[in-house]
Length: 361
Image (cartoon, rainbow, N blue to C red):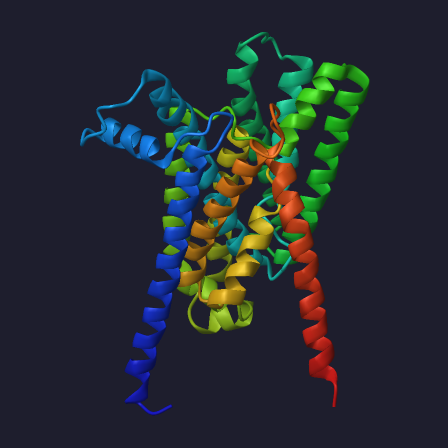
Protein backbone atom coordinates (compact mmCIF):
# COMPACT_ATOMS: atom_id res chain seq x y z
CA UNK A 1 0.00 0.00 0.00
CA UNK A 2 1.41 3.40 -0.98
CA UNK A 3 1.42 6.47 1.25
CA UNK A 4 -1.40 8.05 -0.76
CA UNK A 5 -3.55 4.95 -0.31
CA UNK A 6 -3.34 4.97 3.49
CA UNK A 7 -5.64 7.95 4.17
CA UNK A 8 -8.26 6.46 1.84
CA UNK A 9 -7.99 3.09 3.61
CA UNK A 10 -8.38 4.76 7.01
CA UNK A 11 -11.41 6.68 5.79
CA UNK A 12 -12.98 3.51 4.41
CA UNK A 13 -12.31 1.73 7.70
CA UNK A 14 -13.84 4.57 9.69
CA UNK A 15 -16.90 4.53 7.45
CA UNK A 16 -17.38 0.80 7.90
CA UNK A 17 -17.05 1.20 11.67
CA UNK A 18 -19.61 4.01 11.70
CA UNK A 19 -22.05 1.91 9.68
CA UNK A 20 -21.56 -1.10 11.97
CA UNK A 21 -22.16 1.01 15.08
CA UNK A 22 -25.22 2.63 13.51
CA UNK A 23 -26.73 -0.75 12.62
CA UNK A 24 -26.06 -2.08 16.13
CA UNK A 25 -27.63 1.05 17.67
CA UNK A 26 -30.73 0.70 15.51
CA UNK A 27 -31.01 -2.98 16.47
CA UNK A 28 -30.78 -2.09 20.15
CA UNK A 29 -33.39 0.67 19.80
CA UNK A 30 -35.80 -1.73 18.06
CA UNK A 31 -35.23 -4.39 20.73
CA UNK A 32 -35.85 -1.87 23.53
CA UNK A 33 -39.11 -0.73 21.92
CA UNK A 34 -40.18 -4.35 21.52
CA UNK A 35 -39.35 -4.98 25.16
CA UNK A 36 -41.62 -2.10 26.19
CA UNK A 37 -44.50 -3.40 24.09
CA UNK A 38 -44.38 -7.16 24.73
CA UNK A 39 -45.43 -8.87 27.92
CA UNK A 40 -48.40 -10.34 29.74
CA UNK A 41 -50.24 -7.19 28.63
CA UNK A 42 -49.34 -6.26 25.06
CA UNK A 43 -49.06 -2.52 24.49
CA UNK A 44 -49.42 -1.06 20.95
CA UNK A 45 -46.37 0.87 19.70
CA UNK A 46 -48.26 4.17 19.63
CA UNK A 47 -49.19 3.75 23.31
CA UNK A 48 -45.54 3.08 24.19
CA UNK A 49 -44.53 6.23 22.31
CA UNK A 50 -47.23 8.29 24.03
CA UNK A 51 -46.18 7.16 27.50
CA UNK A 52 -42.51 7.92 26.86
CA UNK A 53 -43.27 11.31 25.27
CA UNK A 54 -45.55 12.23 28.16
CA UNK A 55 -42.87 11.37 30.71
CA UNK A 56 -40.36 13.43 28.74
CA UNK A 57 -42.80 16.36 28.75
CA UNK A 58 -43.15 16.69 24.99
CA UNK A 59 -46.62 15.25 24.35
CA UNK A 60 -48.54 12.05 24.84
CA UNK A 61 -51.35 13.47 26.97
CA UNK A 62 -53.83 10.66 26.17
CA UNK A 63 -52.32 8.03 28.50
CA UNK A 64 -54.11 5.93 31.09
CA UNK A 65 -52.56 5.43 34.56
CA UNK A 66 -52.42 1.67 33.91
CA UNK A 67 -50.46 2.09 30.66
CA UNK A 68 -48.12 4.53 32.38
CA UNK A 69 -47.46 2.12 35.23
CA UNK A 70 -46.88 -0.88 32.98
CA UNK A 71 -44.57 0.84 30.50
CA UNK A 72 -42.77 3.46 32.56
CA UNK A 73 -42.76 2.06 36.08
CA UNK A 74 -42.30 -1.64 35.35
CA UNK A 75 -41.01 -2.37 31.85
CA UNK A 76 -38.67 0.51 31.10
CA UNK A 77 -36.40 0.06 34.16
CA UNK A 78 -36.38 -3.68 33.49
CA UNK A 79 -35.39 -3.16 29.86
CA UNK A 80 -32.72 -0.60 30.78
CA UNK A 81 -31.35 -2.93 33.45
CA UNK A 82 -31.16 -5.80 30.97
CA UNK A 83 -29.45 -3.61 28.37
CA UNK A 84 -26.90 -2.32 30.87
CA UNK A 85 -26.17 -5.81 32.20
CA UNK A 86 -25.74 -7.28 28.73
CA UNK A 87 -23.48 -4.43 27.65
CA UNK A 88 -21.31 -4.62 30.76
CA UNK A 89 -20.90 -8.41 30.62
CA UNK A 90 -20.01 -8.34 26.91
CA UNK A 91 -17.38 -5.62 27.33
CA UNK A 92 -15.82 -7.32 30.37
CA UNK A 93 -15.73 -10.62 28.50
CA UNK A 94 -13.94 -9.03 25.53
CA UNK A 95 -11.35 -7.41 27.79
CA UNK A 96 -10.64 -10.56 29.80
CA UNK A 97 -10.32 -12.69 26.67
CA UNK A 98 -7.64 -10.32 25.41
CA UNK A 99 -5.79 -9.95 28.72
CA UNK A 100 -5.63 -13.68 29.38
CA UNK A 101 -5.22 -14.83 25.78
CA UNK A 102 -7.98 -17.34 26.52
CA UNK A 103 -10.89 -17.64 24.08
CA UNK A 104 -12.99 -19.29 26.82
CA UNK A 105 -12.60 -16.40 29.26
CA UNK A 106 -15.76 -14.67 30.41
CA UNK A 107 -16.64 -12.13 33.14
CA UNK A 108 -16.96 -14.95 35.69
CA UNK A 109 -13.40 -16.16 35.09
CA UNK A 110 -12.14 -14.75 38.41
CA UNK A 111 -14.59 -16.62 40.61
CA UNK A 112 -16.94 -13.64 40.67
CA UNK A 113 -20.14 -15.59 40.07
CA UNK A 114 -19.34 -18.22 42.68
CA UNK A 115 -18.25 -15.57 45.17
CA UNK A 116 -21.50 -13.70 44.61
CA UNK A 117 -23.37 -16.98 45.08
CA UNK A 118 -21.69 -17.39 48.48
CA UNK A 119 -23.13 -14.06 49.58
CA UNK A 120 -26.53 -14.80 48.10
CA UNK A 121 -26.75 -18.27 49.65
CA UNK A 122 -25.68 -16.91 53.02
CA UNK A 123 -28.63 -14.53 52.99
CA UNK A 124 -31.21 -16.84 51.38
CA UNK A 125 -30.45 -19.94 53.44
CA UNK A 126 -28.85 -18.73 56.66
CA UNK A 127 -30.67 -15.42 56.86
CA UNK A 128 -27.72 -13.64 58.59
CA UNK A 129 -30.14 -11.85 60.88
CA UNK A 130 -32.60 -10.65 58.24
CA UNK A 131 -36.00 -11.96 57.37
CA UNK A 132 -39.06 -11.22 55.25
CA UNK A 133 -38.74 -8.30 52.87
CA UNK A 134 -35.37 -7.36 54.38
CA UNK A 135 -33.85 -10.29 52.48
CA UNK A 136 -34.64 -8.52 49.19
CA UNK A 137 -32.48 -5.56 50.16
CA UNK A 138 -29.72 -7.60 51.78
CA UNK A 139 -29.31 -10.01 48.85
CA UNK A 140 -27.57 -7.64 46.38
CA UNK A 141 -25.28 -6.27 49.09
CA UNK A 142 -24.26 -9.74 50.23
CA UNK A 143 -23.72 -10.92 46.65
CA UNK A 144 -21.56 -7.85 45.92
CA UNK A 145 -19.43 -8.40 49.02
CA UNK A 146 -19.02 -12.09 48.18
CA UNK A 147 -17.98 -11.29 44.61
CA UNK A 148 -15.41 -8.72 45.71
CA UNK A 149 -13.94 -11.02 48.36
CA UNK A 150 -13.58 -13.79 45.78
CA UNK A 151 -11.78 -11.42 43.39
CA UNK A 152 -9.45 -10.22 46.14
CA UNK A 153 -8.52 -13.80 47.01
CA UNK A 154 -7.94 -14.66 43.34
CA UNK A 155 -5.72 -11.63 42.73
CA UNK A 156 -3.82 -12.27 45.96
CA UNK A 157 -3.13 -15.87 44.99
CA UNK A 158 -2.23 -14.97 41.41
CA UNK A 159 0.15 -12.19 42.45
CA UNK A 160 1.63 -13.98 45.45
CA UNK A 161 5.35 -13.35 46.11
CA UNK A 162 5.54 -10.85 43.25
CA UNK A 163 3.88 -7.81 41.78
CA UNK A 164 3.22 -9.58 38.52
CA UNK A 165 -0.13 -11.02 37.47
CA UNK A 166 0.53 -13.87 35.00
CA UNK A 167 -2.49 -14.73 32.91
CA UNK A 168 -2.22 -18.50 33.42
CA UNK A 169 -1.87 -18.20 37.21
CA UNK A 170 -4.81 -15.80 37.34
CA UNK A 171 -7.02 -18.28 35.49
CA UNK A 172 -5.96 -21.16 37.74
CA UNK A 173 -6.54 -19.08 40.88
CA UNK A 174 -10.00 -18.17 39.60
CA UNK A 175 -10.82 -21.85 39.03
CA UNK A 176 -9.61 -22.81 42.51
CA UNK A 177 -11.53 -20.06 44.30
CA UNK A 178 -14.62 -20.76 42.21
CA UNK A 179 -14.55 -24.44 43.15
CA UNK A 180 -14.13 -23.60 46.84
CA UNK A 181 -17.07 -21.18 46.73
CA UNK A 182 -19.12 -23.76 44.86
CA UNK A 183 -18.42 -26.34 47.55
CA UNK A 184 -19.61 -23.88 50.23
CA UNK A 185 -22.86 -23.06 48.43
CA UNK A 186 -23.60 -26.74 47.74
CA UNK A 187 -23.01 -27.68 51.37
CA UNK A 188 -25.16 -24.87 52.75
CA UNK A 189 -28.05 -25.53 50.34
CA UNK A 190 -28.06 -29.33 50.70
CA UNK A 191 -27.33 -29.64 54.43
CA UNK A 192 -28.69 -26.48 56.01
CA UNK A 193 -31.38 -25.35 53.58
CA UNK A 194 -34.89 -26.51 52.83
CA UNK A 195 -36.75 -26.93 49.54
CA UNK A 196 -37.82 -23.27 49.38
CA UNK A 197 -34.29 -22.07 50.02
CA UNK A 198 -32.91 -24.38 47.33
CA UNK A 199 -35.46 -23.04 44.85
CA UNK A 200 -34.58 -19.44 45.73
CA UNK A 201 -30.87 -20.12 45.27
CA UNK A 202 -31.45 -21.85 41.93
CA UNK A 203 -33.56 -18.95 40.65
CA UNK A 204 -30.92 -16.43 41.68
CA UNK A 205 -28.06 -18.37 40.08
CA UNK A 206 -29.97 -18.52 36.77
CA UNK A 207 -30.30 -14.74 36.67
CA UNK A 208 -33.24 -12.40 36.27
CA UNK A 209 -33.98 -8.72 35.66
CA UNK A 210 -37.61 -9.03 36.77
CA UNK A 211 -36.98 -7.17 40.02
CA UNK A 212 -35.12 -4.21 38.50
CA UNK A 213 -36.73 -0.86 39.33
CA UNK A 214 -35.65 2.67 38.56
CA UNK A 215 -33.01 3.07 41.27
CA UNK A 216 -31.36 -0.22 40.31
CA UNK A 217 -31.69 0.51 36.58
CA UNK A 218 -29.96 3.88 36.93
CA UNK A 219 -27.16 2.26 38.93
CA UNK A 220 -26.67 -0.53 36.38
CA UNK A 221 -26.63 1.93 33.45
CA UNK A 222 -24.05 4.10 35.23
CA UNK A 223 -21.85 1.08 35.96
CA UNK A 224 -22.04 -0.18 32.36
CA UNK A 225 -21.34 3.24 30.81
CA UNK A 226 -18.47 4.13 33.14
CA UNK A 227 -16.93 0.67 32.80
CA UNK A 228 -17.15 0.72 29.01
CA UNK A 229 -15.63 4.21 28.80
CA UNK A 230 -12.79 3.26 31.16
CA UNK A 231 -11.93 0.14 29.17
CA UNK A 232 -12.33 1.92 25.85
CA UNK A 233 -9.67 4.39 27.01
CA UNK A 234 -7.24 1.45 27.07
CA UNK A 235 -8.17 0.25 23.56
CA UNK A 236 -4.66 0.74 22.12
CA UNK A 237 -3.07 -1.13 25.00
CA UNK A 238 -5.54 -3.97 24.52
CA UNK A 239 -4.69 -4.08 20.80
CA UNK A 240 -1.06 -4.57 21.79
CA UNK A 241 -2.00 -7.31 24.29
CA UNK A 242 -3.71 -9.20 21.46
CA UNK A 243 -0.25 -9.91 20.00
CA UNK A 244 1.18 -11.11 23.32
CA UNK A 245 2.99 -9.59 26.27
CA UNK A 246 6.29 -9.26 24.43
CA UNK A 247 4.68 -7.27 21.64
CA UNK A 248 2.87 -5.09 24.18
CA UNK A 249 6.10 -4.29 26.01
CA UNK A 250 7.86 -3.52 22.73
CA UNK A 251 5.41 -0.70 21.99
CA UNK A 252 5.72 0.82 25.45
CA UNK A 253 2.77 -0.75 27.30
CA UNK A 254 3.30 -1.24 31.02
CA UNK A 255 2.04 -4.81 30.96
CA UNK A 256 1.59 -5.55 34.65
CA UNK A 257 0.10 -2.20 35.61
CA UNK A 258 -2.33 -2.32 32.68
CA UNK A 259 -3.38 -5.90 33.41
CA UNK A 260 -3.95 -5.16 37.10
CA UNK A 261 -6.02 -2.05 36.32
CA UNK A 262 -8.18 -3.64 33.63
CA UNK A 263 -8.80 -6.88 35.50
CA UNK A 264 -9.76 -4.89 38.59
CA UNK A 265 -12.12 -2.73 36.51
CA UNK A 266 -13.72 -5.76 34.84
CA UNK A 267 -14.11 -7.48 38.20
CA UNK A 268 -15.74 -4.44 39.81
CA UNK A 269 -18.18 -3.96 36.91
CA UNK A 270 -19.10 -7.65 36.89
CA UNK A 271 -19.57 -7.71 40.67
CA UNK A 272 -21.97 -4.76 40.49
CA UNK A 273 -23.99 -6.41 37.71
CA UNK A 274 -24.12 -9.88 39.24
CA UNK A 275 -25.12 -8.53 42.64
CA UNK A 276 -28.29 -7.04 41.15
CA UNK A 277 -29.28 -9.49 38.40
CA UNK A 278 -27.77 -12.83 39.39
CA UNK A 279 -25.56 -14.99 37.21
CA UNK A 280 -26.42 -14.60 33.52
CA UNK A 281 -24.17 -16.82 31.45
CA UNK A 282 -22.86 -16.89 27.88
CA UNK A 283 -23.34 -13.17 27.13
CA UNK A 284 -19.77 -12.25 28.06
CA UNK A 285 -18.41 -15.38 26.40
CA UNK A 286 -20.23 -15.45 23.07
CA UNK A 287 -20.83 -11.80 22.15
CA UNK A 288 -17.13 -10.79 21.80
CA UNK A 289 -16.56 -13.72 19.45
CA UNK A 290 -19.55 -12.75 17.33
CA UNK A 291 -18.37 -9.15 17.10
CA UNK A 292 -14.82 -10.19 16.17
CA UNK A 293 -16.18 -12.26 13.31
CA UNK A 294 -18.01 -9.21 11.94
CA UNK A 295 -15.80 -6.25 12.88
CA UNK A 296 -12.33 -7.61 13.52
CA UNK A 297 -10.15 -7.44 16.65
CA UNK A 298 -9.53 -3.67 17.00
CA UNK A 299 -10.79 -2.74 20.46
CA UNK A 300 -11.80 0.81 19.52
CA UNK A 301 -14.64 -0.85 17.57
CA UNK A 302 -14.82 -4.21 19.35
CA UNK A 303 -15.74 -2.77 22.77
CA UNK A 304 -18.60 -0.42 21.79
CA UNK A 305 -19.96 -3.01 19.34
CA UNK A 306 -19.82 -5.67 22.06
CA UNK A 307 -21.73 -3.33 24.38
CA UNK A 308 -24.48 -2.71 21.83
CA UNK A 309 -24.79 -6.35 20.75
CA UNK A 310 -24.65 -7.60 24.34
CA UNK A 311 -27.39 -5.15 25.33
CA UNK A 312 -29.57 -6.26 22.41
CA UNK A 313 -29.01 -9.93 23.20
CA UNK A 314 -29.99 -9.66 26.85
CA UNK A 315 -33.02 -7.44 26.21
CA UNK A 316 -34.17 -9.89 23.52
CA UNK A 317 -33.54 -12.85 25.83
CA UNK A 318 -35.58 -11.19 28.56
CA UNK A 319 -38.46 -10.69 26.12
CA UNK A 320 -38.37 -14.42 25.36
CA UNK A 321 -38.08 -15.26 29.08
CA UNK A 322 -41.31 -13.44 29.96
CA UNK A 323 -43.25 -14.29 26.80
CA UNK A 324 -42.50 -17.86 25.74
CA UNK A 325 -44.73 -19.52 28.37
CA UNK A 326 -48.23 -18.31 29.26
CA UNK A 327 -48.58 -16.99 32.82
CA UNK A 328 -45.05 -18.03 33.69
CA UNK A 329 -41.61 -16.45 33.46
CA UNK A 330 -38.42 -18.43 33.02
CA UNK A 331 -34.99 -17.22 34.21
CA UNK A 332 -33.22 -15.17 31.57
CA UNK A 333 -30.04 -17.21 32.13
CA UNK A 334 -31.84 -20.24 30.73
CA UNK A 335 -32.57 -18.32 27.52
CA UNK A 336 -29.02 -16.98 27.10
CA UNK A 337 -27.61 -20.47 27.67
CA UNK A 338 -30.07 -21.95 25.19
CA UNK A 339 -29.03 -19.40 22.57
CA UNK A 340 -25.34 -19.19 23.42
CA UNK A 341 -24.38 -22.85 23.82
CA UNK A 342 -25.40 -23.98 20.28
CA UNK A 343 -23.77 -20.93 18.74
CA UNK A 344 -20.54 -21.48 20.66
CA UNK A 345 -20.51 -25.13 19.59
CA UNK A 346 -20.90 -23.99 15.98
CA UNK A 347 -18.09 -21.47 16.46
CA UNK A 348 -15.75 -24.18 17.78
CA UNK A 349 -16.68 -26.45 14.86
CA UNK A 350 -16.02 -23.60 12.41
CA UNK A 351 -12.60 -22.86 13.91
CA UNK A 352 -11.66 -26.53 13.88
CA UNK A 353 -12.74 -26.83 10.24
CA UNK A 354 -10.69 -23.75 9.35
CA UNK A 355 -7.56 -25.14 10.99
CA UNK A 356 -8.07 -28.51 9.29
CA UNK A 357 -8.42 -26.83 5.89
CA UNK A 358 -5.37 -24.67 6.54
CA UNK A 359 -3.22 -27.70 7.40
CA UNK A 360 -3.91 -29.49 4.13
CA UNK A 361 -1.13 -29.38 1.53
